[in-house]
Amino acid sequence: MHNNNVNSSLPMRAMREIPEAKAGAQRITGLVKERGRVSGYQLSNGNIINKQEAIDLARGGDIQGVGISSRKGSEYLKSLPDDSGTNNLNALPTVSAQS
Image (cartoon, rainbow, N blue to C red; front, side, top):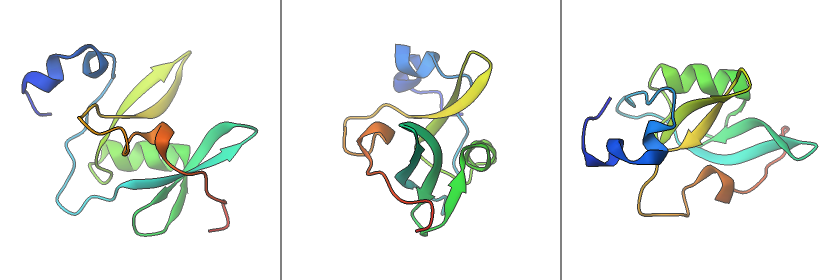
């Protein structure tokens, strides 16, 4: 985990884990939704993965730009704060699970 001034911000402290991304880690480029809720993600290599697979990959450093948070016992991915809103998960397009 990086230990710079950004990590002391409230959004960073709200995350349960902030995995260190490996060189060549994928980025999330799209969201798969079911009934309005995120159920999976499209990665920069085009692969579609479910929510738990994404959490496991992020934890292993294979997805960059995300941290892991939890609410009511369920883990989920959250964008790491930076100066750009265009790469926030909630700003990404919804994609089909069949992509």
